[in-house]
Length: 535
Image (cartoon, rainbow, N blue to C red; front, side):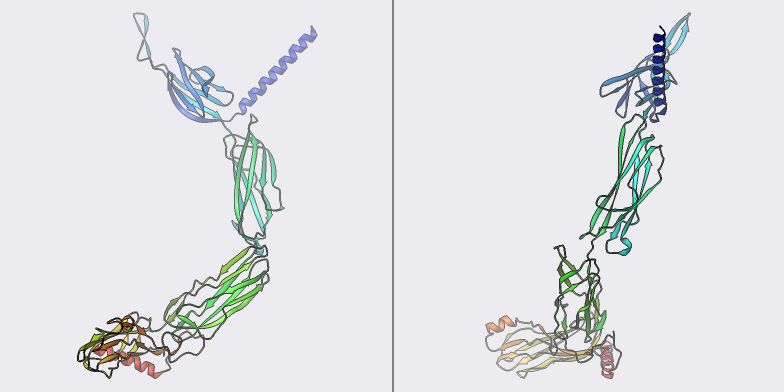
């Protein structure tokens, strides 16, 4: 009998302990309100996080019968009056704010009667159990690291973890995966007994070694938390950051040139190559090219093969002088270097020629045309000579044309002296010849000499039209000299497009001053002539 009593007492203790544990667990639930003042009429439902809450029935005692269902299965039903609540499995809870039967009871002749429409409703608050959640931030002092730079040999990492969920987290394990990045110092795994809601744990820090990849490479650092809630349900959260590590090789080709020159002055060009990487580079094939509208002052080799050790520089691999043929803004072609890296991969780099070189000066073009090519003796021929300055500097221009011996000047002018303005200043001569001699007659080229205030001078010629007087026009003449048209024929006293008669010494001066009285006199005289004609 005594044993039976002791067994009953022990069983009662276990039952009480179990009930206490359940009650304690229920008290630990952190409820989160998802619906406030949800008004449900008879038979109506509201859905919260997959649960259906339905007002099943009402009675006259201001009581509502509420059910909780999920996936079509009714899980629990309970009656509620205002101020009461019930929960299912510590996952969802319903609280009744008020219950309105929506009728009045009146007494008449000692009897009670209900008035109004029978459409009761209840105002409910619906709450769900809060879950833990983590916001994980990974920060590095930089987003991009240069494997070649001494200051970028290490990567300092800080990981910050915050419980931004709606309940505390228990048995939290934080693990950082650095991938291919080597850890120099610090830990990458931490454990926490619990992390409360809105709590931020102390940031963790560690240092990684910067790798030296052959190509620019992205590396990903990942941090993950695994935790449990009060019902031992597991949760995983993750944060990451990607950093870029620049390649360990670097070949730099630099090309420099004189920034400002005048027509007739030389432009100096040099190319330097530097191996700024961590590895030697052998058999670098370097090739350069000449800018159009310029020519070499003297022959130069513009391709070369060389090798450079890590950190080594080859100064002035190419060094040459160019003579401008035309004024304007010029961007030099890029110098190209091709090579094979020690890992066997081919590479190519070019110089960064973002700057331009300004060449100043006039550029005189002269054309000579005739109005016809086939005529009879005694016929008149109209000749037109147009001179134009397409350069970026004014110039005094003297044009002198020649009448062929086979013809006679009837009217018009064959020469002028005038300042032609930059960017299209022009002058046209028109005169009439009488062709007196039978045969194939070549009209002489017209000459134009010019001079600017920087002593740059030269002479250009027009083309030489051919006319046929009293004889049939040959097939050859017809195709090479279309009627009324000739091309510009610039005199080639130098390899340049325009002959220059001064200022060809090699120096780095930008613009020489006046040292020629002739230059000043010529341009001022031309200017005076222009003003006289315009008045």
